[in-house]
Image 1 (cartoon, one colour):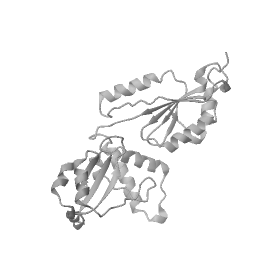
Image 2 (cartoon, one colour):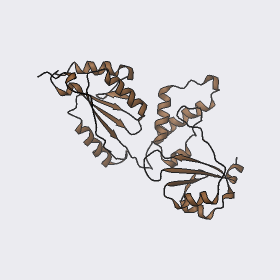
Image 3 (cartoon, helix red, strand yellow):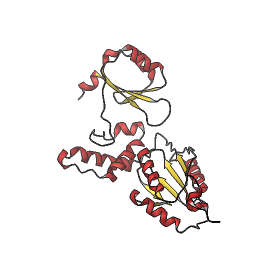
Image 4 (tube, helix red, strand yellow):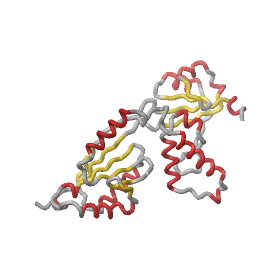
Length: 262
């Protein structure tokens, strides 16, 4: 029986599962292998990585040519097989929604009518998220960008994606020690500092587990704020932590003495 693409209405089956593993553990490899095993029978598998890359059946594909490559692949499959009209999309947690939407637009140009979207979350150990080699590459790129006159900046998309990926996967300690990202990078939001630090604010942060506290670039326990007067601080800014966990926010406080060290 020949299955016509018109026979199916477009169905979006979203199977969201979270595969949590550490890059440094055997358990991580086991979990990843289970995911890979479950995909063996899928004929059209699209991967969207944290670094903004797109793969079709493990081969990197330029986004603009994705539809063309899918059509070529469909022609190798039996027309009476549902496999020819079904695509599995594997999305890593760090992939942008904008890229996911662009991939879906490419798929709409093909005869795919069933999409199985699977999101994979990678939770890495704080102590070994990014290797020192990658951090060295990150530091080198950021330093070179900072040293360039504005008129000579030619930032390659590949380098920007790499730096953003490395930064997003650093541990807290690694971010403290690494080169600070300049505000002119497209994915960096300019820091907005607040100066009105009250006793009420300190109490709010100290008693809530929804906040992570950093003083002068050093992470401290929340109850540390109970012993510090607000007059000692010069300013602060609040950031939303990337992973959907508790604490949800980070409060970055800077003392007056911190600025006197400059």
